[in-house]
Image 1 (cartoon, one colour):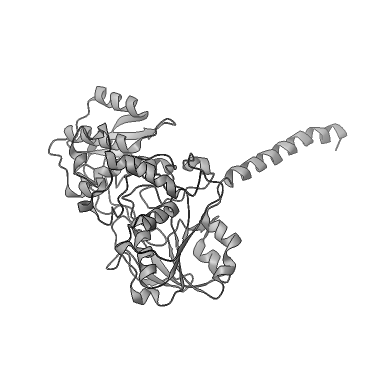
Image 2: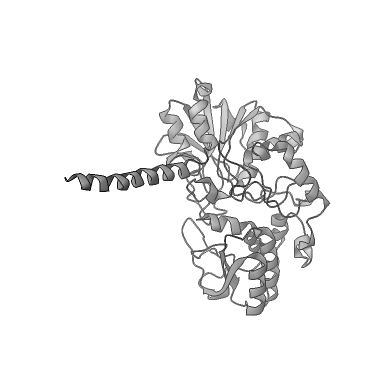
Length: 404
């Protein structure tokens, strides 16, 4: 090789090294609680019988926390499976069965079947219960309710609980929606908090314990394994972490962010897009009639792109069985976010009222009140403010921040 060719290669090699370095840096912006556990806390698990409340989002890199802990010599005695299963292969509402994990031989207990709370029998074979699941930042997303039940069970059966923290995909600054009213407490609403609470699950656990939100005001023996590198201004794309769908109908961050508001359509007779390639981004019904001018106004107000769409919902194994209007042609809107889109809850409420008005025979269901935590959502003027209790929450939550 001639000398001048060598000189030409040097800048090229430097460019490659620089790109690789930048790529690695972007991937490692945030270190999850699971990663911190593996690096710093494995000695604390020595000789302990460990139960895992996990699903497929509980990963260290591309490896499940279950496999990582077992390969590290941790004695994992049981897996507790939430909604969608511990490998995330079941659709919304599908019953999860007890069984054995084929790959590891570890016993699996369902927390989304006849039991949603751990029983004494389930807890007998463990000393420490580790909770690790990727949340989406919505009060009605059931993983946070499962966490509440785990904390209560830890107290009841005298077991230590560890919560491995992960980012709130919507960020730590976005808070919106009504505070859950007592009469609407359910599995999709377990805490007196807004719809978008702006907390990590670790922060929510600390707040729940200290505010007396657990059963009987109990205070379990628990710890939160904090993340490193996360701050409140970060939405998911800022973290550098790979998006692993926390449930089958949230295949991307965009779906999950918009879901904070379009989930309300589950409480109506309109389709929320299950049975399509874009659930929660595709809304409508066979009787929906769109006024382009009004649609343009909503688009402008919320910095979101809305277009009309025709779609035919179909059953998809592991994702959407028997969706609304299965096999029928429906008309409605498709949603595409912009970088400026920042208020999915308010957007979802306004879009819901508009499409309900534009859909002949459309009805609200009781389930909508559970999702919203109040009946106020059916009032078209409900977006004027979220109420005094909301303002109190926004101030009180700051006491429980683990991250700046």
